[in-house]
Structure formats: structure tokens, C-alpha cells
Image 1 (cartoon, rainbow, N blue to C red):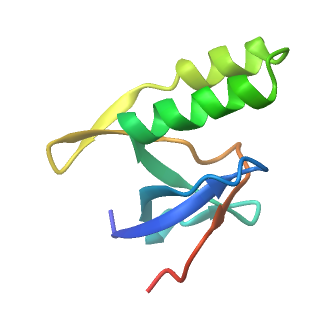
Image 2 (cartoon, rainbow, N blue to C red; image 1 turned 90 degrees about the horizontal axis):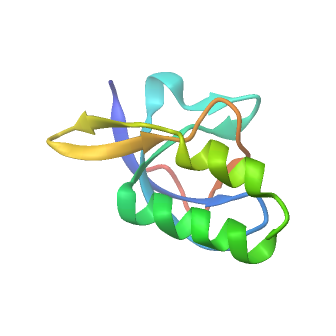
Image 3 (cartoon, rainbow, N blue to C red; image 1 turned 90 degrees about the vertical axis):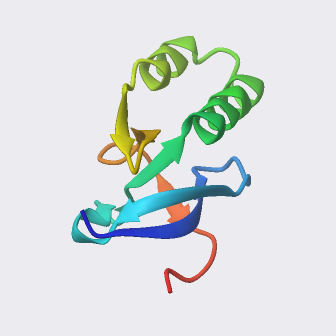
Length: 91
């Protein structure tokens, strides 16, 4: 993995999430493929529930994403199906 720190936002939530991005698998369909810590994962899911309380199936899908260890810490891969954008430069 060629990991870089970045800041992204999910869809229309307007919340900044620090994350890791594998620059060898940076995007899916033009959207960023972030790895989030559990704290950021939980923030994103809580905001989704707040904004769209009727989309509980989608929330359950988000909660079902399992973690993987990166540098000794649990990260959740939220790429390949979701609309993420960079907040600031990748550099």
C-alpha cells in the first residue's frame, strides 16, 4: 500500500474526515477510496442517521464494513461504492 494522509467529505455531509488513501487505489468512479479510523467511521454514520433517518438499510450496510489493521490501528475501507471527495490537496 502507498498510503497518504488526506481529508475527505462524504456525499453532502459537509464534515471533514481525516483518513488514509492508498494512492495505488486512489479512486473508484472518480470518487476517493478512504480508510477511516473507527472514530471517523462513527462520526460519518451518526451524521448519516441525522440527515437521513429513513435510510436505515444504508446505515446497516455502512456498519457492516469490517476493519483491517494498518500500522497497528483499525481502519475501515469506505471506497468502491461511496461518494467521497478531497477537502484539501493530496500533497
